[in-house]
Image 1 (spheres, rainbow, N blue to C red):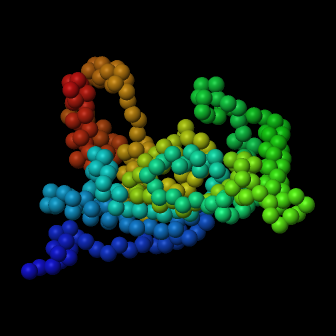
Image 2: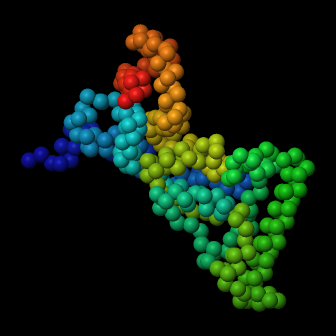
Image 3: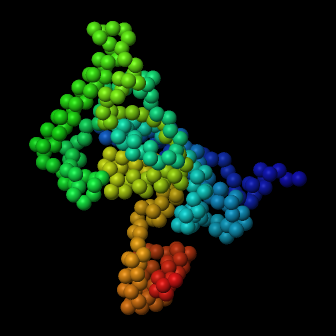
Length: 311
């Protein structure tokens, strides 16, 4: 009887995972973010090949005609077949301000272990925003920045924040030290409540690629807060190195897209009905824009026909 390993090797093209040179060059390297923060890629399990293998095991002989990895990865991403992307995992060591961490932790699909201020003493490091990102409250967006303030006002804001940080950290140390330098002061878990949320913390953050891409799609968005966006952009570069085919598909089908609402589709449908889109016009337009993939062309044609018919 044939061994199960041989069966998988023959049917699905299994091979052991190997870390690429691009990923190897990134491992354990501190990538600076903001003034005192960083992101370190600690470990990677899997790559584009892991995604392909998982899909072919899942779909079996149904994918035998789709032998090209790029085409399969793009098909999976385009049609939101997300499970194969969960076969890739990435682990990061991140140093970040607490207020950024509180936003970040809203993504509850990762494994997290954070620096403990109950056990250890917090370092005297605070995030101080640069003048060019200090802005007024947005008039139209209640959770965002508006126009940046002038240089003089920004310098005053920075000075005020820095003064507050020094005072709060001084009180933190004083409380732990006790009166007159006594050996026993307040417990660290009590003393830490004096510290503002721009002090830096650290954590290990491990997540699968599907959920990581969802995180990046939200946090790389121009509407995301500047500080967390800086971390997301650096992590995106690491994902691109680890799984370049998945990243290309992610950019095409998640980042560089425009979502239309029901009313917007209705308006667009009426506009398209007044313009004939013949097969020749469609083919020439695809050719002129470099949209060469026949499968994707067919899917687009189907979408246009459904749009015009209202189905």
